[in-house]
Image (cartoon, rainbow, N blue to C red):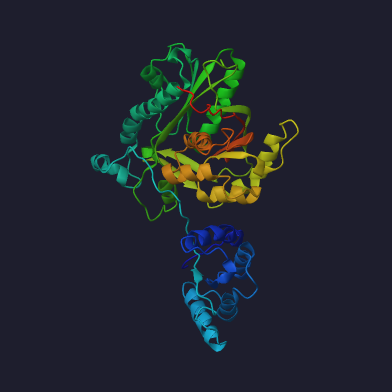
Length: 457
């Protein structure tokens, strides 16, 4: 039947909402900010795309005339389009007596658009090495039975990685491990009995009577789930101190390529190893404990009719994970309902979404784009999530805790008044299979700067 090509209805808006970022990245080194001072060679994907570019860049009516001319006279001829437009620009410039080949202007830009998605991830961390893969060739062949090899690898290492994160959290907390009353451990990497919660209890030397809660296979929303459960435990058990640990080694998700299963490449381009830990409590000892955020309200919800948007299957070959192309748009179209539900519980109500700070699971760049667009957020509102996606990738459950940590660190570094980018209220979002959404309303804590000359510990 040849090639089938499908275009999403929101493609023009998607191109339009990203065009400013592309322009800024291209022209900031040159020092150009006036988009009307340029000439344009823009692929003729469709009139709606050209309209969105013109609107989002604030271009004058004639700026895209070469593109509209080619679209009108030749249609969308694929990759040759931009060369047709380039030729049209230089011909018209000559015919109209312009001083340059670029409509009389010095600088211009050429844009082509097509299938694909940049992950925006620069770095990721993995337990897997070339040596490990050479020793386990079945992991490199799509469909080959390799579950035993993967289990033997991740089951002992997941709690060890979790231990490293837990020790950092405990050290910053500054209290002995004997004060930890509850443990919430989440992972989508490997399953065993007794579980990773049991192994971590031994590794940390926790009290044998510690109350343990093990969360398996909740993938990217697990960080939010763990915080919600920890909040309930802390509020309903006097004196409770809950250690939350999320640890992932994504060797279970790694597979060799397959021409018949190209959709798995997206998750493999995103997923990475990581671990994070926090301690949650209520009725703090203000002399010895110094909170970072307050968990005010938490809820989990399933988005109706979205079961296939994000799915994973445990097989003899490991875990196969599939992300629907519609996933970012499903999240984007439902995000305002989640916000309205969450903040209607706050006294006085909050409806200005730009008055909040955001701790959003960095699952995909397009998910962050859709959230920003649908909530009308300013450019820097999701900077903590973008930073984690760029520097660590999608670590599933730990990711949102990495974003929380980035938020409070940057707030302090930049001299903000609170741990939430200087703002009072914020929200944490986790998204995962179901489609399941975890929402946590956060209240920031004032950052106290010691007076000049005073000593700190």
